[in-house]
Length: 183
Image (cartoon, rainbow, N blue to C red; front, side, top):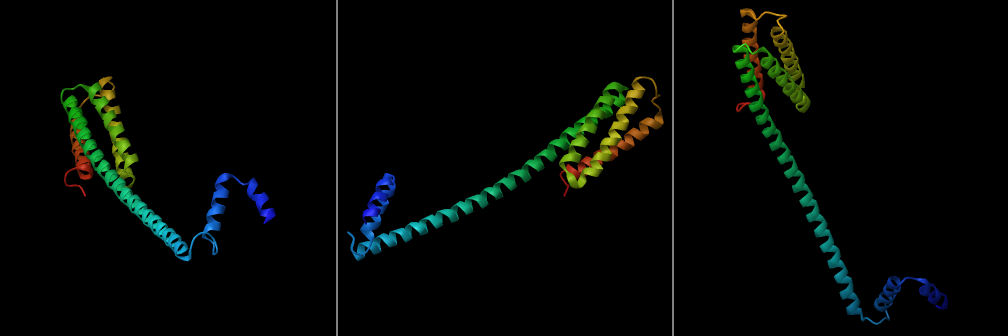
């Protein structure tokens, strides 16, 4: 015991307090058998409370994951609606510019549409290929309208018919992916 006393003297104050508590609850210590049982039961109750809190934390984490997933799905749907609105507007402007023979602005809007299609290709991996192809076609039309603006190419009836056919296909593509009746 003498040796233990020297070790206790070297321990921090918090450790010596715990040693005293342990001496009190040992048989023959300060606490009676009933008091020791009460301390043991309170420890068990504390353990049960801790387990319930851990379970609740797990439930909160699961609910948080569910909420994040739901929010992400809603954000994707909202982004799709934004893209539909932007794409439809840009396509309408491009059509108007072609009808007015404003070739520079038509080329600019086709470039904007190509960027939008490229962005969709990156954000929608399953459909990325179709959006990339649409973006390439818009780049081709951007080049075509720039050449018409620079008088390297003449705007013929055949060219405008191809343009109207392409814009109808592009509008259908946007509506099929982000329209009100898309899957």
